[in-house]
Image 1 (cartoon, rainbow, N blue to C red):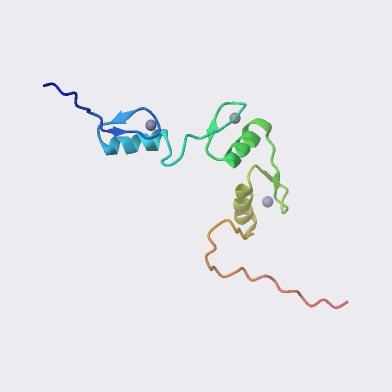
Image 2 (image 1 turned 180 degrees about the vertical axis):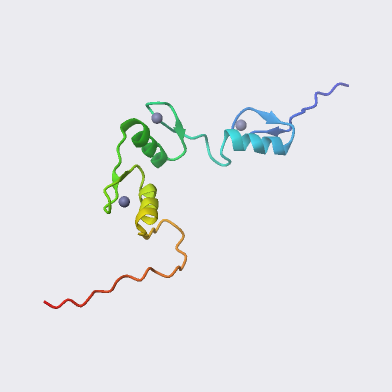
Length: 121
Ligand SMILES: [Zn+2]
Ligand SMILES: [Zn+2]
Ligand SMILES: [Zn+2]
């Protein structure tokens, strides 16, 4: 009795493909899909490049297509496409560390701010 055996018992949950091993499936999901997510949806209208995050697409459009640099260094006037680039620049070029609340708030000691100098008028 020739029962048809499935040789690919690991179907991809995101598309119609199936695989022989779980490892293959995992690799496919990593390559073609981000596990647990659908394929990136933010497409650049100018060049069709895809981005997973909206702000990445925005940055891409500014950098590649419009040349817009909305984040300006107030120390030297240099412009940056994304905020994090400006931060890196501030730290690298001027030694200024900005507090970022979107990062892990490790209890690093706060940079001691220069206290108010007593100004006598
Ligand atoms: Zn798939
Ligand atoms: Zn583009
Ligand atoms: Zn600067």
